[in-house]
Structures are given as structure tokens and as C-alpha cells.
Image 1: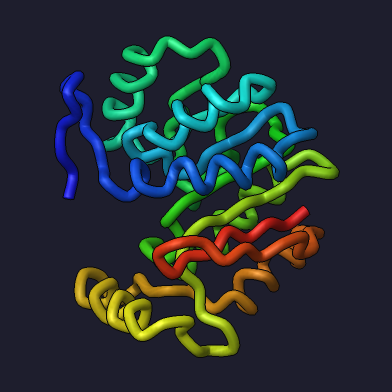
Image 2: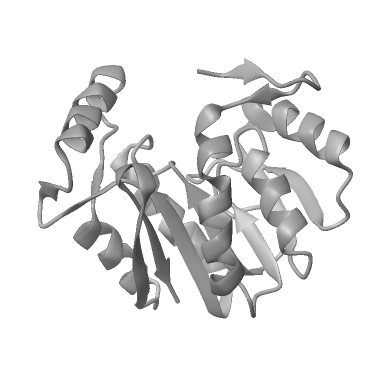
Length: 201
């Protein structure tokens, strides 16, 4: 549930809980990258944490129109020089705004999107990502049609109750989308709270 931090900014508990452990991996994954697009920046909590701890990166935030004010407020409060945006991004609309990038990151997005939007997202990434770029997704996945935990199966049911087009995605299907735009699997890290951090490049 969204709350307000001491400085009055809208805050979600999930990014606060996972930003450190994700950031530790991204420092290695994006060591040689320079310009990152975050798809679905939400309140900007991940963006400011990652940008602060990876000053060699220019971090481009993005989201749909209704979330841009949350991001603007957080970026203004933090005042970091290496965060750009926010870009208004609907993954189904082409062309995507902003410059070419050599890295894309998205957390807890694709199980909320309809599958057609996931397909569109990878098509957009294929147009925006420079050769040698990396794509990193964080969230829960199924493998060979099976949930990794009973709690993820319950979460999937809850997602579908909210929106029948949502749901935890099959890794194999998402990996196929990545391969269709010329990417290969680099790593699949098991993360806390039954999530994965998957890297393609």
C-alpha cells in the first residue's frame, strides 16, 4: 500500500524493501553501461537509489502519464545530476520517446501488464537498445509452466482477480521475446521474496 515518507513523497514498500539487493546486482550488471531506461519508474524510488549508487550512469525514468508527477516530485527532492526524465511512455505506442540506451531495467511490471503489452515492450526495447546493451527484469516468474512457490501461485490468482489479463509470466515465453530481438540470456538470479532478476544481452 502506498504511503507518504517523512518528506511527503508518495512511497511504495516494495521498492524500499528490494532496492538494496537489486542495486547490488545492478552495480555489476551495468558496470560497462552508460545510459539506462527504466520502464515503469512508479514513484522513482528505485531510480534515485540506483542513480546515487551508480554515478557513472545516466538513468532515464519513464512511466504512463498518471505517474509522472510522483517521479517529478522525487527527482526534485533528490536533486541528482545523473537522472533524466521522466519520459511519458506507453509501451504500446511507437516510437518510444528519448534517446537510444545501452541498458533497460523494469521491476514488477510484466506480471501487471497484459501479455500483448509485454510483447510490445520487447518490440520497443528492440528499437531503443544499442548493440551490446543489456535488459534486466525483476519480478516473479514461472518455469516450464510451474510456479516456484505456493505463495507465487496465490499471488497469480490475486493478480487475475484484479485484472484477468495480468499474471505471473512464463520465463520461456519472455526469453523467446528477448531472443526475437537478438538478445541471449546472461544470468537468472534468485532474489528474496520469491522473485528473480533476469539479465539478457
